[in-house]
Image (cartoon, rainbow, N blue to C red; front, top):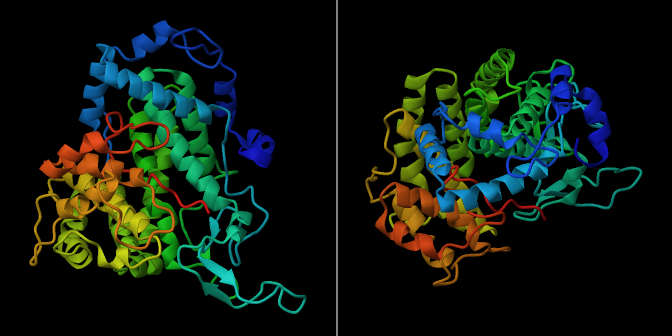
Length: 437
């Protein structure tokens, strides 16, 4: 459990997870406490398997692991950065939606609950108006009040930790990482006492107005595909990850995919900005992960006319995002969804990178539009409350890998994100500049 909830989280962990934590562990390099012996790690990496991932390219992961075993110095440096991140998660979690102080109206503690971040009370809070209603929107200004609802932040920690830990296990063979990833996923998604119901009925509520909104789907869509890929990586034979875990996650995925076909999902799919792009990306990834390859191909194919055409201008700008107070953040954010959607498309034979719209709309042009600011050659020409050049790093890598010559030339000038550039180990774009204040 994180922070004040760690003690309760330990009590909620499954018996399998607790048993895993009691196994003596040692470091691959030095036999220090917390990691497996070096011989075990080497044995685990002897015959790498390509995970059946939905955004990541499993074959590229297998090739990277093979090169790592041969001593590739660049990959060894990247793995050192990855291990540093993964080690930071070993003493944290698991997390559960049931460990919160409020129950959603009409729901129960197994339902996810979050509050819209950019909505603020417009009046002083009094005995007659304890919420300060009505709430008004302040675009790009995050209301710290939302932190009182812990599901949102803990959801982010589940997604990030499971992804990082599973990757760390894959590249090092250290069972400490996979066992903790399994415990985190099991506690949040499948343990009957602690699991989250597969819906977002109460995401991004606005006090005094809505007990849940379709727009809240982005709480999950912006990062949930990392969970899909984490479970695919663990499925290659990770210690602590069982057939029961695989089945439980598959059941959750199917339930969530079905829920996305309801009213909230239909409304979010109609969004004309990053919400719509992320919805398509999450849906296509879920369709692929649950064996519906043809449906995934259809979802990605539709994005050509329904997402690229209306959202990307001929010059590569994104009109719906550059009008925001956080125009750099949202331009990169939307392109994370596009590049991950293109990655899903690669698995099902649909090439979004080569598509050109009727007035010249192109995904590579949208990445190229970021290059002057991403490489420090020119200031970003639109409003931005907190510019961070590294937010574009993964996007430039993705475009370069897809054959964009301008992006390839820009890679050496990129600003590395905090924690190091891990693209060689997990070639899939992530949101690197989360809004925290």
